[in-house]
Image 1 (cartoon, rainbow, N blue to C red):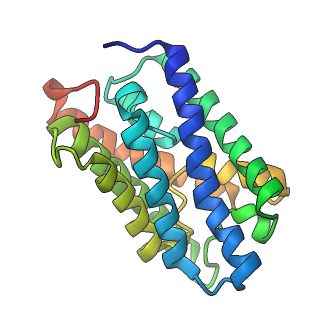
Image 2 (cartoon, rainbow, N blue to C red):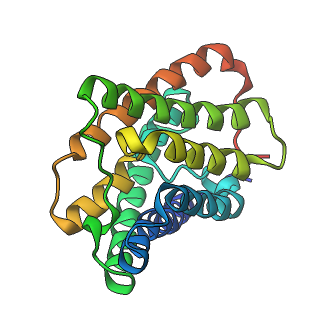
Length: 227
């Protein structure tokens, strides 16, 4: 059944809220109570769990973007209209900001509210393409699930899994945000914008590249919901 833009807006807001609470809250929680000893593995598992919840709860309504870069990918492939892009973007940004506010109020404000940070021991010519690659891999898995109806019944595991794996193996270089809304919210509330430009450029480039790859290959196989 078709869902209204209002329904899409609501579930995208809720889903992005959950994602940001888990993704950034795990980092704040680790730093506050464990001095960061849980590290990247803990930060990778948290958004995996959040996306399991979000995809299986809301995937049939909104395709569970929870990410402006993913929304742009879906627009390029023709899944959503221009006006829907606005609904998605506003919902994702509001949901992310509310998520960071929740973290600040109920977990803590450590490590800039869990804001993404690249490892500046690496050069920018490495950091930037790694973030592009992480975002492209996320978009590729999403499109594989949606276009081919692959991994039937395991869409949440696949999408959450690629986010977790990207963080596990690439966060030590680029921060592996893959999500401009997830990067924006803690930056706004903590007032630290140093690296925000990276996460408002590289993820869009990565998802756009993958969107054009899939648009050409599976143009006739668009679907409207996860299986």
